[in-house]
Amino acid sequence: MTEDADADDATGTDAAGTRPGGDPRDGTRFGTRAVHADGPADPATGARAPALHQTTSYEFPDADTAADRYALEDRGHIYSRISNPTTERLEDAIASLHDAPAAVATASGMAALDALTLVLAEAGDTVVCSNDTYGGTTTYLRDTASRRGIDVEFVDTLDVDAYRDAVDDDTAFVHVETVGNPSLVTPDFDAISAVAHEHGVPLVADNTFATPALCNPGDHGVDVVWESTTKWLHGSGTTVGGVVVDTGNFDWRAHDYPEVAGPNPAYPDTDFSEYAPDAPLAAAVRYRSLRSLGDQQSPFDAWQTLQGLQTLELRMNKHCENARIVADYLQEHDDVAWVTHPGLDSHPTHDNASEYLDGGYGGMIAFGLAGSEETPGPAGYAAGKRFCEAVDLASFLANIGDAKTLVIHPASTTHAQLSPAEQADAGVTPDLVRLSVGIEDPADLLADLDAAIASATTDDAATATPATDGGTRGGDGA
Image (cartoon, rainbow, N blue to C red):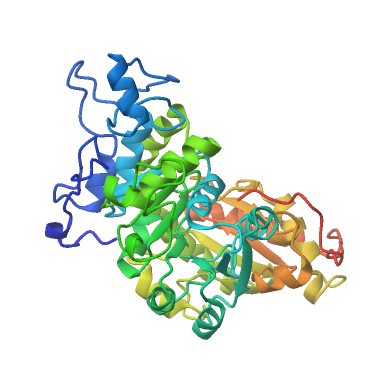
């Protein structure tokens, strides 16, 4: 999102009561909204920082109110598995940053995907998903959603005709990532959303790598956004969380989504498209997924994430700046076989990234090492693992989006549960190193990377052989 966005477009939507905490979109720009994400001072105490409502439940003033709340006729709080004042503050803030009517915070990014899948897909449905996708998403759709009778068809992320061929009457939704993990490709949102909408199905996007600071998918035809708030939205590597954002773009009443529009299976007297007409998907996620699955975010985690949002724009600017410096350095390094970053002209989707990532290309880089004289070429698999072991300033761990620089070797970790063919489809080559560039001084980063590359590519570097039997089960993490 750009700082010079038309402030007149930032209007509130409160008619359905989906933003009970008030709408912070008062004409201020993105950075200001992020800083004030925690809302106004408490009117009763004057406390400027948001309160932490660490409670399981809420006292009813009388029996009729209790009954009305359970019937969804009174929108007060019942139980923190469904809603909580602190978590609500975070939801309002994230919705505001997406220019969306409502958001629902979840326990993790994967909980967000699970929550939206529950209300959009049922047994016999198919999810059409881009193949340049986080390994956890791939295995969730392939191995977990499938146990509910939901099929998945993976298609070439950049082939619009592949989506067109795959989407049919059984399709529940189309799923893409704003920036693929870890291939870093950006799809053509406008073209893919047109295909989805031609068939009356919503487009869902994982916007974790971009955050609303760089991309607002709702402006490009996306109907449902989900993110891992664990990453850049929070930014400090201390707090796991996720969010589902209802952009308000999709006409749920015009299509067959019984959990969202029409008499709800769990609430026969409630039609969420009438209960919350601006954001019925968000209402369905809250009252069906959170209530039934326990996918909610804890009040403490929401309180932590609210504080992270205040520095989102500053951090994303620095992540983007540092990533470009590092990408340029790696391009010129003799021991680096290849490097990819959306901001490089050589990146296959640089044009898409330039169109959709409004304000920067993100903090992620992928690259491969040439290997040593003893282990050249594809044996960069060994050099990639060795590099991760050799970093000092950077951390070798399964996360991204931290203020600190992080590295990992996806083929042996986050995507290890995929077969070699599935890894290739996801853009994971045996030698690929994923680098989440932090906000340290870039000179120190380059020194650390240079030393680690030297250590990984010497003739006595450790050797290893890529898995050829489908890898090991249990690889996960970010």
